[in-house]
Length: 61
View (tube, rainbow, N blue to C red):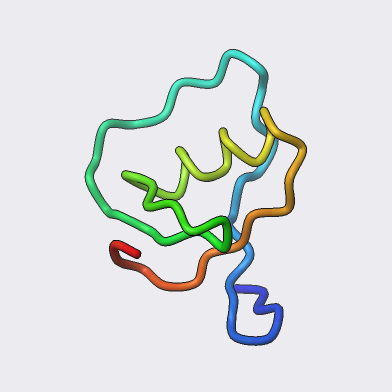
């Protein structure tokens, strides 16, 4: 688990453009101020926006 200051880098692995996330609900809060339903959803947003979004906490923002 890599931490950047107080924030955690999500473990995205090798995601393809058509990657489907599991539907499990394990909310994480991103450094962009958004709550994501799970870490995979945050990874998907990182990839789509080419933004280095980190996890501030494992819960809703």
